[in-house]
Amino acid sequence: MGQQSFLDFEYGLRKRRTKRDEFLSAMDKLLPWQELTEIVADYYPKGQRGRPPKDLEMMVRMFLLHSWYRLSDKAIEEAVYDSGAMRTFLSVSLADEETPSARTFARFRRMLKKRGLDLKIEKIVRECLSKNGLSIRRGKLEEAYISKQKQPKK
Image (tube, rainbow, N blue to C red; front, side, top):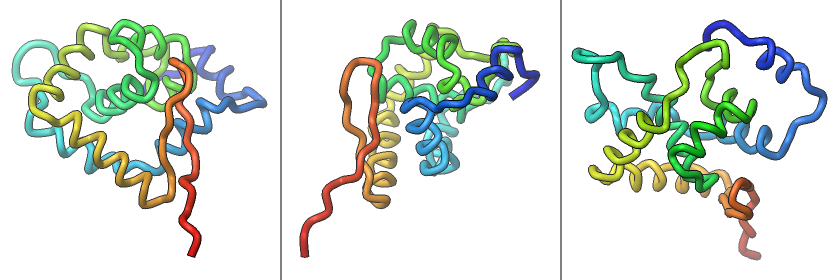
């Protein structure tokens, strides 16, 4: 993350954490980011032509936010601007102009889907959560929860 905006600074001083903060913080610590980005690395632009590509890990994280919260491409772009928890999860600041646009994200998402990489990413996430006795269940449109799986009685 580059220079912090006043809003980012103020967000860091808050006294209460939301469920979204807790969920995204848990996912940040739990998921194997190196492994998730390696799945996409061979297909991701290297920046030899045109605009430099966005950070690959940030794009994978944005894909997961999109999936967990069931947001459209435009809605995920807007949510990142509106949610301090999502900006923290993506490691972006409002002071930086590095948040991917809806169009950039849509191209990335379509590339993942075309090559079946979206399913590979989601499989790794499910396996990682399962190993830790966790699962994601979806509630309302904007909410994702992390819950302990019921352990079978012995």
